[in-house]
Image 1 (cartoon, chains in turn yellow, cyan):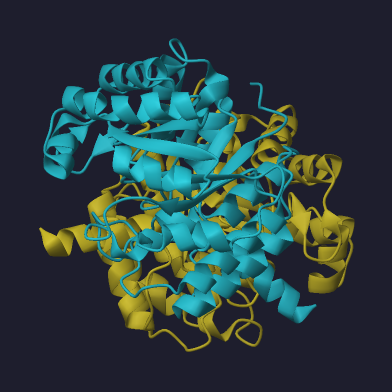
Image 2 (cartoon, rainbow over the protein chains, first blue to last red):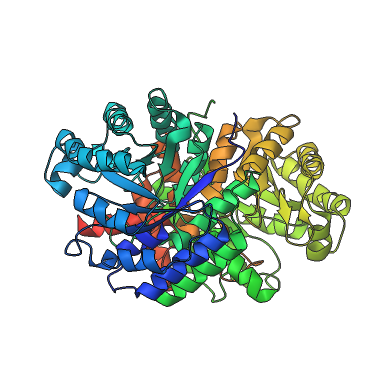
Length: 303
Length: 303
């Protein structure tokens, strides 16, 4: 079994992580979070979302966040852009990468954006075209690539189909997302290998949740299937809207512990991520949702 | 990569899990815990420890626990017996399996039992002999098989050596334990494969901790290395004495979610384990330390 020698982490705490926070996180805290993360060495930080503030009030200050951060050479600051209006705002804010968000589940698509998968792809076309014209990196995220909260297990064919459509739209990176954290390690391997028959595996990323404690194991399964880009959220920020009180994104600290323990390079300073995880959790008034983060922080206090 | 089709879980919550609790857990609660677990279908429940009550006051009522439980045919009720006195008490209490506890770390051995690894093996001989005469199953646990809180990484040779000595003593099952949860998935594979060159892998078990969030991934790595016996603790009971406040044993609920998700049979009813995990955690006055346990319990409440 061959594992990658280096892995790129896409750090999603500032966007995916904070998005579900009920209390508005001040803009200066968001800026400090992004800055701390870029100083820790992340190559890609999902920093904002240019969606209607009516839908996601927490992300209403995306332009201010992008204007306030200190850009680190080598870090891609990415943002979500569901439509042309969002794209234009993202472009004005000088993001380095825009992400479109689709779903492999027909039921999820219908319930969440009130259209079919096919229609959702059509809606992405103007954004994809604009990104091409602007010369901006385009990333495509596929939610419910394994399971859906409404329809249960999603077929491999459906995920493969959406990935191919994302590729045709010009995406240079495609996220295979276990939105509800229900994927098994064997399913992760199966789906990743099936998609990799149609999309260069170097362009694929794995986005896992720890809802049922499978996040790190699923990262391992993805690496074993040839994936070398992994999404993670510092302090495990981001709950699961489909299981109240449940854990959300797999914690970056735990993923780094796995990768560094296996001798896989990330270019990221785990120690600095642990500090940032404790800092932002303290700001949010709770314990970090990361075993490695909390254990390493406790060890530091003793030292 | 071939995975086992069936896995035996050794459930350690009643002993390893409760042992570190500072407040004494009433005997009737311990009995109910063991009974709930045997009803859930576990084949082996580590139910008591026959050590000096001066060392481990929490386990002082082992004989009463063993006398009070309802024995389920098909379940092995095991107990720790560090010496002949403990063995005799365990035998009188009619346990089905006795376990001796060694360490692969010379430093850990010296600090914890004030003797060398060689001397510790010699101390186990009378217990092993008595178990043979009594026709009782003998299990051997090897702590610090990967890392040691005092000496750091432990050599593969040392773990292989202790496993061979345990085999020579007559152990029919040998536990390869990541006492501080610091093992990486690749290290788990490497050590398990090395030991399996000297001991039938069907006799080896993996005992992992979730201190740094690696428990489930390390279980996966062990399965991939041909291991089909896994230790786990319902509700993740059992802290880590070497990192205050850190998570302890990998949670049985999370391990079952992994195994069942991969289509591996265990004979255990996850739903019932989730209930038991919530019940005992509520008794102990805290949230269960199991993502799967808490998420599945939350889903039940909504249903």
